[in-house]
Length: 175
Image 1 (cartoon, rainbow, N blue to C red):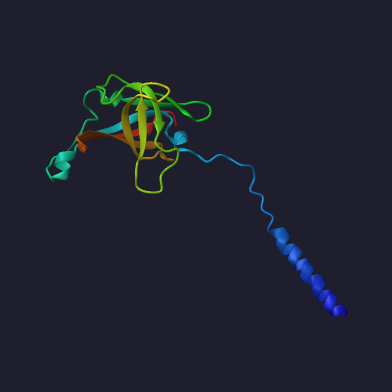
Image 2 (image 1 turned 45 degrees about the vertical axis):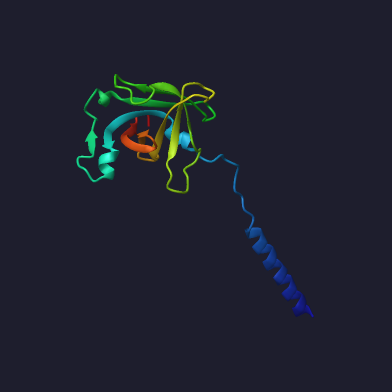
């Protein structure tokens, strides 16, 4: 009988020990990192490429041109501002460059997080703070990471068909 009690006692000790080891401390809740935290700030142009979408679709060359050294584009900078809660506020294009889209206004992303499919997040550009008058749309084709680089694309469309796009390769001016 003592042997039986000893086995039960040891079994109980082992069960208590195993359940005590399962006590997880995950710490305090921290909000997930949004794309706003990665996109906000000032960005400088590394390269600007104009792509003839019609030529590319039909195998005609040349189908792209480097605009980086033309029209003062080396001076191109863009700033995406956020408030203290990481909500988007204003954007502004700086530098004496020909405007390809409205040079200032308000912005927001089409999604706070990177989508799990291959769709690009869109940077929606607005005339006003309540986002009721949209003035443009940029595609976020490369999300900033540890390298401090981002790629955005402006696509011009007529009758639902893209005919030209501009690819901006940017690097963080204020890493």
